[in-house]
Image 1 (cartoon, one colour):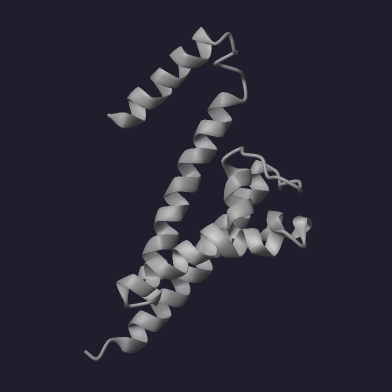
Image 2 (image 1 turned 90 degrees about the vertical axis):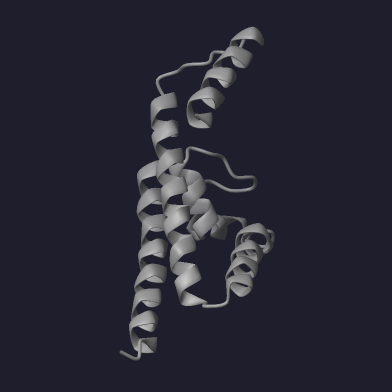
Length: 132
């Protein structure tokens, strides 16, 4: 329900403020944002399977996506486009301070690559742990 109400409310608020609410780029950004969220979900599942301790998995995810990406891009702004957060932002049609992002399709492929690597590593490790 909130997935329907939020865009409608955003369109109304933008319209009242006099900003164009619908441009030809909006469907692409919406699709990229949805794909980005799906990939983040899969990345979280893979990370949770890779690290069996839930607290550690959440801490690693928060530390990486909230701090490590940004700390790495401070001295090297061009690096941000190649990191997971930069790739997800490119897929979602967002901007990044201090650097250019990949095109949406490139960010999507790169972010999907990160997700595949984490999920395959989690799968391999989980199969090794299985004692049956």
